[in-house]
Length: 342
Image 1 (cartoon, helix red, strand yellow):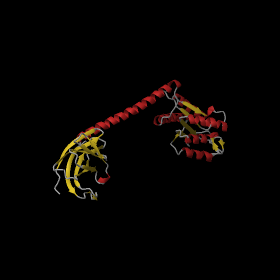
Image 2 (tube, rainbow, N blue to C red):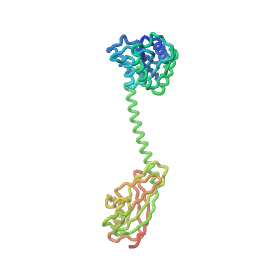
Image 3 (cartoon, rainbow, N blue to C red):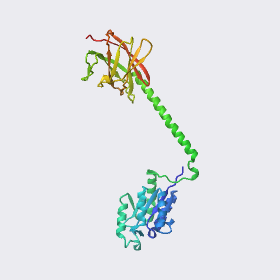
Image 4 (cartoon, one colour):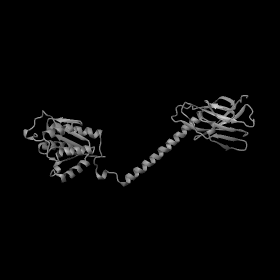
């Protein structure tokens, strides 16, 4: 799309007329739109409203300073006011100051406001500026600086009305953007499910130890009033190439249903865990720990399962299934644990 930029050219008037003309020509040859003080008939407050509106619509601001400060209002020249206004509107400013050694007519040198001119130059020098010796050099510097600025910091610019996007195009873009976002969410969800399935398939399980304690403790923390056989089970996420943790719940499937069950991660107190029961047929009960477990790729996670055999119906060895519940499905591990003698 062919985009043209509006460039506001600012300087004092009579002394820099030739320089402004050269800059305007260079801007036109670049295919852009120059705006300058030749458009304004007088330097008064009414014209200041027009000037500021043109500055606001401009994409770049070019300032040229020689040896005059210019006509003032309330102690500031119009050139300095234009500069300050452009900076306040965050419009990119390109400053060009004449070299002290450049030849210049004596009648175009400031006589009464030299201090104000010097202060203005120092203000402009706080930002990167270029220095010029001749009109031709100045025009070339402006063209080069504008090209770099447009490449590095492109602005909204102007385009032909027949090239602009109409309501129908904007509506279609909005629809496509919404559809794209929805598809991205679906792909992400599908990817996560595939990863979860791969981790579930690669999950490893091992029984580390079993023990009987009347007042069992885990990491030194007691669980008052809970006695029975405690089974430690370690889970390993053996799919380290996956990027996300694997989150799941643990269940125990036993037949006949003669036990109670508690499950949890160290060091949580077992009595704080919610345990729910899922019935599956007449001879099988699944006990599911209410807390989620999460294993990072390549890591291990420990779970303690308490078998509370109040009626002494458990006979060693005990056969059971550890059932993993995850968004990707379930997986059973058949286990046989030996209950140590009391």
